[in-house]
Structures are given as C-alpha cells and as structure tokens.
Length: 371
Ligand SMILES: Nc1ncnc2c1ncn2[C@@H]1O[C@H](COP(=O)(O)OP(=O)(O)OP(=O)(O)O)[C@@H](O)[C@H]1O
Ligand SMILES: [Mg+2]
Image: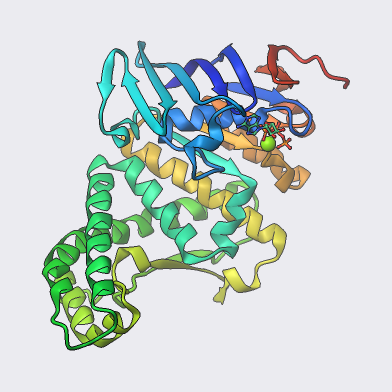
C-alpha cells in the first residue's frame, strides 16, 4: 500500500499543493517552520481522520480561511482509491472514491499508517492515558471490531459518568448509574481480553527489535495493568469486573465517575527488573519509545499481512549514529515519509529516495538546499 498523490488546499500553511510520492522513501527536507510536519499531518488526517498535533480541526484551516480540503490517492494491490476530507462550518465530510462516508471512523484502517514523532517519549515518561492510546491505536488498526467496541464502550462510560454526576456524591438518591453496569462489563471485558492477547506478541517483537537495533535492553518487559486488578486466569473476566464495581460502589459515587475499566488501564514497562518509566535515562526512554512504535508497526502488519505507511517526524535525531543504520534497515520495504531539517543521518538511503524541498509554503522535487 502506498500514497501516490497528496493534495492540500487551505490546509495549515499551504494555500494549495499537489505532490506525487513514490513507494519507498520520501524525504521532506526544509528548515524549521517551513511546513514539513504539516504535510505529515495532511497524510495522517487521511489515515486516522484527526490531526496529530491538535485536537481542533479548526487549527488545520489556513489562517484567515474558513475551510480546508485534503485529498489522497493511494494504491493497494494495483487498485487505485481516493480519500478526500473536507472541513467547513465546523464539520468534516469524507469520501472514499465517490461514496460519502457518513461515519468518519470507517476510514480508519484503510490507509494504514504509524506516526513516529519526538512526542513518543511520552509513552515512557507520560501519564497512563498515553499508553492506553497506544494500546487502542494498535488494536484499532488491527481490528475494526475493536475500534467499534471501543467507541461503544466510551459512550457507555460517558452515560454512566453523567448518571454518577447527577447523584452529586450522595448515597441516598438511588443508583441510576447502575443501569449501565452490564454494558460496561460486557464491552469492557471484550476490550480487556483483546488487550491481554496483545502483550505476548508485543513482548516477542520488542525483544527481537532490541537485538536488531543493538539496544542493550535484555530484560525489557511490558505487562498489562488492568484497573479491575490482576486478571484471575481461573475465573471469569466479567465476574471479576462485576466484583470490582460492587466493592467500590461508594468510591465511584464519592468521586462521581467510573473508576474501573479499560478507560483507566495502563501497562508497566520493566527492564532488568526495575521500573523503566522511573529509571530510564533520556536516551533509553527515547529508544524504548521508538521500539514500541516499531513493535506496533510490525504487530499491525502481522495481522494484515501487508506493510503500513510510516510517517517519521524528525525522529532520527533521537538515535546515536551507530543505531541509525539498523533502524533505517528495519524501516525498509515500506513507503516512508521522513521529515528532517537536513539529510544528516539519511545519507545511506539518499540514493534510493525521492527528495522534496520544503520552503516558504511550497514543496518542490529535488534537493535545492545548501549541502
Ligand atoms: N492553520 C495554519 N495556518 C497557517 N499557517 C500555519 C497554520 N498552522 C501552522 N502554521 C504554520 O506552519 C508553519 C510550518 O509548520 P510545521 O510544523 O509544518 O513546520 P516544520 O517544517 O515541521 O518545522 P520544524 O522543523 O520546526 O518541525 C509554521 O510556521 C506554523 O506557524
Ligand atoms: Mg516539524
């Protein structure tokens, strides 16, 4: 699968650009603030329906305009398809070929992609929400059913929370929120089981990646930490979930929110038996995060038996020189988009890459910069 052509109109700093890409490596080179990440963001929008640096679609609209339009033409198994996403009056509208896609999330998974950015270090150093998002993205890109179940689950949590809020922390006003419990347990347990099954393959993949990348992390290990407690292998997951809710009724009412379930889970990362999140150096954290993203990529690819597109926003900076080469080798065989301020570190792949110069809100083929 690869993206052949990208058209951006009134999107971020671009009035209108139309770029053709090749399968393999595409290098977007330009100085700071010229619009490299904005191109990656346009591509990411087509695959994931959202921007990666902003929660607001409005931020993607070129300053002083009121709409944007993004179009991508991609090829898969020698078939060409077109995804378009337009934004106007606070709403996004999407089309796949000529068909209107009413539920935007139906686009997720068509153009499979993984973004690598410097913010990934948050996977190690950041709060649990970042790691949950990582689990959810990995599983959603692997299974449409997971994504749908996740969306339904979040709706139930929202309803349940709003019922808990209405109680205002008082124990005496009935337990209206409880009408949501069975759905919470049913959908939540389904998500938890999918997450449980992810950890074994992820641990195998990270182990092999560390050895290829020559990262000295022999006992790196990820373990799932569900908020309903350590999974009791003999019993039923749903019973365990139900019991947790029962035992903590007072607490949920007091805090006025749903405190247990997949929306509160986390995973631990240990290396040589210590908490990696606490004790890793800056460089180790970056290496750990990069490896998790590569593992995510390989896992998704193993499920679908096809390669994903990789968006690499200035991440080579994070690697010392002897690790750059095996890293670039691992990326091979896919369509990759590298954004970087120079070709430093990319020399090895320069020959077989298409280079684009990004300058003053324009993108041109070839390398027009000073060496
Ligand atoms: N909605 C918008 N309308 C117009 N310009 C915008 C909008 N959003 C961002 N920009 C501008 O786009 C420019 C390019 O941003 P971008 O993040 O793509 O740069 P970059 O080339 O990745 O730089 P760096 O090397 O620093 O990461 C910035 O100057 C920013 O102010
Ligand atoms: Mg950038």
